[in-house]
Structures are given as structure tokens and as C-alpha cells.
Length: 279
Image (tube, rainbow, N blue to C red; front, side, top):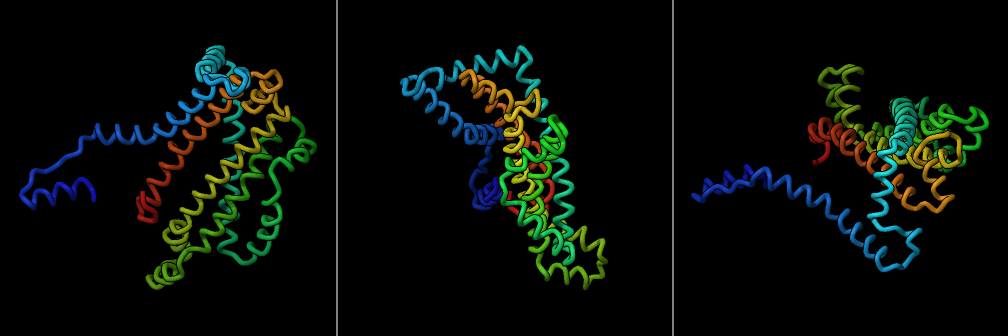
């Protein structure tokens, strides 16, 4: 029951209307989102203070924040993060465009499905890191090979989900649109694409996770001179756990920002607004 329903029913019963202040709603949402992070931080600090692990291997949050601040002020951490984000967005952008197009083509054309499905089925189960040596040999060290590898590996879940989404569109929707005179163009725009969009968004989320994993791993292989993966791997060599955790925290923040600012907004303005899924 929404706030408006409560107000309407209370007024109808002769009771004073109850309004929930907007500030209370915002505060409850913030508390609900921060609660798991506060619990994890408290447990982490408890383990660090009890000394169950050496302080150099399991630093307190104060030490981690100090390293984070030091690296940020010096410009080292922003430089690493900017390089990683550039490779991530470039590779994932390629995967998103190519993956969605191939997936939709597979769902709409039997010939495209016969051509691409066996190739995707064989390539998808192979770990992304297994492709890394080949890409480094073929395209050399640097951004180009890293971007191509990220795009190649993250395209597989996008293709699968786009294909599944097109296949999952209900036949009655298609026939109803055709009965109302929709041509192939309108059928795709108003029926196929909206019906498949929840699956496509899921594929994009999975593809982004794949992109993160393979990119950080490739950066750890010293294929590039800058990047969060390179920084984390270098800090491991010198047992700088606080620096490692700072890099991991930046990866988590970037991933959360992409989810909240990109995927959730796309979902809200499309499938939620159309009633395909609930908010």
C-alpha cells in the first residue's frame, strides 16, 4: 500500500491522514543501504584489534584510510583508477554493442543462431584469463590488447542473455501486434526490444562483472604500466596490504557507481516504467 493509499483510506474512515515526511523516507533508505557496510566494517575492525592476524597482513581501517588518503592526494590512485576505467569502458562498450547485436540477430534469425550459437557455447565456458596469453602474443602489451580482451570475454554473457530475451518474448504479443498491422520495424521496436530488455540488462550486468575480473587480472600480468590491478599486484610483492585494500575499495566504489548511476537509471526509465519488472 502506498502513502497515497494510506491517506485516502484514512480520510475515508474519518481518521486524520498520516503523512510520511520525505526526510524520513530518505533517512530510512540511507540507513538500510549503509547497514551492511557498517556491520562488515565493525567486524573487520574487531578482528584487526584482536590481533588474530599480523597487523601488516590485516591492517585496521585507520591504516587503510590513511593509505587511501595518501595515495589519493599524491595523485597515484586517481591515475591508476583513470587508466583502469578507460580500459573498462572501452572494452565493455565494444562488448555491449557487438554482444547485443549478435544476441538479437540470433534470436530473430535461425541462420544467425546456427552460426553463432556453437561458437559462443564453446568460447563462453573458457575462463577469460586463459585467453590473455593469446591476446598478449597477438596484439602485444598495452591498452589495445587489454581492451580487446575485455570486450571479447565480456561479450559472451551479453550475447547469451540478449538471445534468451528475444526468445522469451511471448508469442501472443507478437501475434497481437501483427494483427494490429505492425510491420517488422514496429514489431521489433515496440514488442521485441521492450520484451527482451530485462534480459539484456541482466546480460550487461554479468558482462561488466566479467570485464572487471579479466581486466584486473590482465593488469596484474604487467601488460600495462598503470592500472588498479597493476597497483594491487605490485603492493602484494611488498606486503603493502593497506595499498592493496585501497585499490580493491576503489574497484568496489566504481562498480557501485556504475550500477546505481547507469544500470538502475536505465532500468527505471525503461522496464520499470513500462511495467515489465517491479521497482
